Image (cartoon, rainbow, N blue to C red; front, side):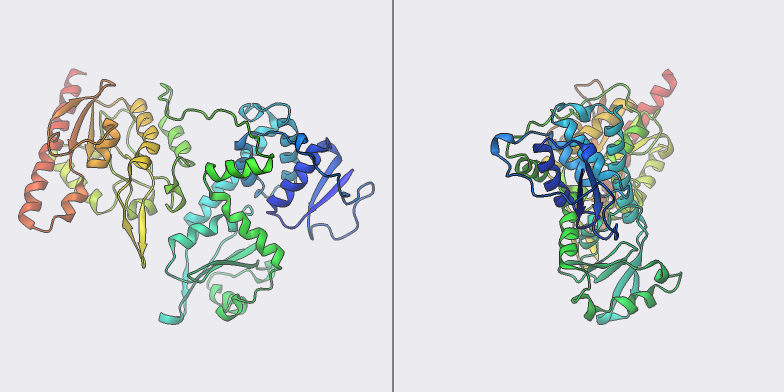
Amino acid sequence: MYLITLDCETDFDGWRKAARAFALHHVAPTDVTWRVQGQIKDQAPPGLSEAPSLPPIETEGTFTVPANFIELARIAILHRDDERFALLYRLLWRLKADHDLLGIMTDPDVAQATAMAGAVQRDAQRMRDLVRFREIGREQKAHYAAWFEPEHHIVAFAAPFFARRFADMPWSILTPDVCAHWNGHAISFTPGISRTEWPTPGRLEETWRRHFQPDRLTTTDAPVKRRRNLQDASILGSILGPLLADAERWTGGRISPRPEVNLGRKPTTDDLEALREEAAHCRACHLYKDATQTVFGEGPKSANIMLVGEQPGDKEDLAGHPFVGPAGQMLDRALEEAGVDRKKIYVTNAVKHFKFVPRGKIRLHQKPNTPEIRACRQWYEREVSAIQPDVIVAMGATAAQSVFGKITPIGKNRGRLIDLPDGHKALVTVHPSYLLRLPDPEAKALEYRRFVEDLKIAADLQKKAARAA
């Protein structure tokens, strides 16, 4: 029997190194016990001893694992379940013989590890949704603090999001596990707040001032080794490319990943709620890293008009709903004048994550590029498959590129129904945000009337379909 003591709760590197060595030396999962430094202060239980140095690993003894196991393990290891290290080593042990194991969702180990990773992702999203900073001090000496109680070890995982989202202000997120701090240049971590000192409502400032005055953050009491491991954990949000490279190093450069599932398919059984849940975890492009959340389409499945915009804006990104900001208000007014009930149509965007650049406290919209539009087109296709609308209205150049699958000029295609290869009809018009940007009042009024006339074409088709029914 072997006893492995990891440096901290998020010590993925320590687990990986030990797991690889044990697997290469054919040490069965039942012969390994995992624990975390400081978790067990007494002597090791009878029959257990710290793992001795194993013989050097020969190159010929390397083995392959599916690349997506690395991603799964990195995230699942942040779960609070004490058995996660043993579970992941058991999966690794079994994957040596069965590379397709992760595709068997009915397998108890696979199901449990997947559920753990899902719980971690949801907890990180919950942190992004619920953390609200309170200003402490004023003007040049202002600091921002927030209190959060995570279910899992996700603080270092989620901290880079807040550094990007609130890059212009110094902040601290206090939690029972570990506290994250941003000084405008780098993230640092200090030990968590003990239960006896948890801030009660209205006492957050007092707690922060007692523990985290700015001049003390540079001399943290957190051990260097612990801080390093927490910082390592922040790479968990990286996309598959870096994970594949990491996996190659881990397995001696010989990876045989399972073929990826084609998410671009359009199954007839697509359900909108299932799609919305699946899209919430989309990592097909890098935009998810900075956005608050996926903003999926909304509307009844029976809708015979589908409106496609460009991407969520700042207000939509924070609210999680499409077209709720200024452009959405312009759209609502135009729909009403065109005789279209928004509650009876489906509204979505070509790209489901907000793309922006920070400018102080403002997030400036950036136009999605072609790779980002292509990466997100799978969701548009599956929405169309689920709804089967009579007409698809592409609002703006980005929407038109998604709907037609290629760059499509607005001017010469605007205001007429166009047959799509899949049998649906499409209508091209401008995006309502274009109307908001027009500086000349006369030109704005003219373009607004044209926009309403375009929407009336879709409204007439909707009425004809209703009469035919």
